Structure formats: structure tokens, C-alpha cells
Image (cartoon, rainbow, N blue to C red; front, side, top):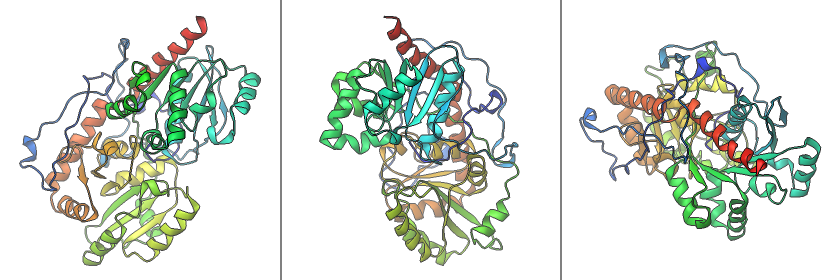
Length: 440
């Protein structure tokens, strides 16, 4: 999952920013090998489709409420709320569910888990959300299942969470994380463990068709039980957030004419590669002092964090900011010039989708997880090396028409293909598979 910050997982209907009507299956073409963009941009085709493949019909969703915020020029009220990851039990009237996920504060995994828990509880289930890293063995999970009288389970990440659900006699489903397919699948022992998890799981969810294809190639026996559901997006920027104060605290020269802030949102760990662009960007800043790069994220890997701090300290025009709550982070995204993703691998970056929703242009490293949601020159810009990033960033700065075209298409893409309501309908239907298993 992509890194973003944990937040209150329960946006009311007034927060829904996406139309709830699903579209046909979605596919994106490969970006051009050259960084040059086809012109005119108005001639580029924009795909209208949706990455949802389910073997059952979805009910007709309720009409979407008006968007809570209207892009860069409007900010809805939204006070900061704490992330609150960890154990949680809320009331319900149907199944008693265990939900295992990695709940490191201020990360995309925590955000996704909280949002999905809300979907399940809205269907009447009681959901016990626990951090997979709090358990060392399935035996500890067995004690929890007995103590809480849990009837079924869900896990975000097959290896980190799904392996703990095996052998307990309760039905469970799993959700692929980017780490499962991009890293853990390459380790023989972990690959075998995940294969066994899929044998026992009643269903598995992939964020994209590409992730589904990769999973089926790795574990052919799982074909038929893997469904595709993209992440649902709802953004809630804090209307009271002070951008000028943020710039001052970040030691960014506010007097610079036409200030351009490029924002990198990620947990500080090697797979997110926040240092990938630092040297090239610092050279650009020395040529043009009005451009800055700000890296925002939690200190996930202590050793790597020290390296990041040391490099950033010596890099002109680059700043490192600690994590912040979701509403404040959305306000920062909304105020920055562009969102940058430089990860080595991604499942599906929520930060990219949230930037699109907030009408902020996206520049993303050309990796499978990013190219699945960013179409080069249409919904964002893809780069393959730091030099190409600088070239594209300079073009974006100097071409307002390009910026407008990208943010318009990006917002439309998110509204069409990442509906919060459709995501809710999908998970509530999939959980019925576990209910049916209990009745068998």
C-alpha cells in the first residue's frame, strides 16, 4: 500500500468524492519510451473503465452526495483527528470478525485497514482490528479467537497477516499488499507460505488486474478466487491548516517568486526510496532557488532514517518533515505544486490517488504499481530516472496548460475508478462468502 497517514476511517456520505457507478474493466497503455509528451494533449485518449471483476452483481448504489471539497480553491472544515491504529472492537449485529493488518501509525496500511473496517462494520459486523506484528505465532491468534468468540477473519497482506490465520477452523479472506507480490513472493519460503494461505482462504483481493495476473502466475491453484477491487478514495483537507506556517517551520523561503513545492509522501524505508531524486533536485534548486522538495513521513526503518536525515541535511532545497495527521497532510498536498512518488515498488499508492482527487499534478516513478494508475501525459507524468524527472518537472512548471490538463484528467480518473462506495459494496459482498461458509 502506498504510504499516507492514518485517519478517522469513517467519512460520512458528504465526503464521498467519487460517483458510485462502476465502469467496465480498466487497462492503461504503457507510457512512451521517451519523456517527450504527445501534442496536442487534447488529442490524447482518456480511458473510461473500472478495475472491478466480481462473479456477482453489485446492488444499485445510492446516489453520491455532493463532494465535500472542490479542489485547490476550496477547503472543507476538518479538524485533526488521531490515527488510532491498534486494537478496536465496535458493535455490530452479524458476524464477529478478526481483521489482521500492519498498523504502523501514519502509513497507508493503517489507513486502508481503518477504511475497510468501517466498511465491514457498516454491514452490521463486529470487527476486531489488530496489528499482525503483535502476534508471534498462530497459537496466540487461537487464544484471541477463543477469547473474543470470533467467527471469521480478514488479513491485509498474505505473509504478514494471512499466515497467522491458518488452521483455526474459521473461514477467512486475504488482501494482497504490494510487499506480498513485489518482495515476499521472490523468497522461496515466504512464497510457499503464501501459497498455503491461498489454499485455505475463501477469497483474495488484488488492487489491480496486474497484481491479480502476477498472483495467478505465482500460485495457479488460486485462480478463480482472486478478485480485483481498486482502493476507494475520500480526501478531507483541514480548512484551518496554515500553509505559510508550514513553510516557515520547514525553513522554506516564502519570499521567493513563484514558489514550487514538490511533495514526497512515504515512510522512511528503502523500498520507498525517498533519496532517489535528492541529488538531482538539489542541483536544480541551486539553479532555481524557488523550487523545493519536501519529504514527509514516519521513521519506519531507524537505520535508513539516519541515512535519509544525513543526506537531506546536506542537500540544498530539500526538507524532511515528520508525519502528520491525515487532514493536515491532505491540506499540505492541496497546497503544494506537485506530488512525487519515487518508490522502488508499490501495490497501489493512495497518496497518488489522493493528490489526483485534490487536483494536484502527479509525477511518479515508472514502476508497475504506479503505471497502473498514472497514464503518462494524461493523468500524470512517469519518469524512469532522476534526469527525466527534472526534465518533466521543469516542463510542468513552465506549462500551465499541461498542469491543467493533467489535474482535470486525474480528478476524473479517481472519481470514475476509485469510488469509496463501490469499494464498500465489494467488501460487504465478499464477506458474505465467509458468512455462507459458516452456514455450510
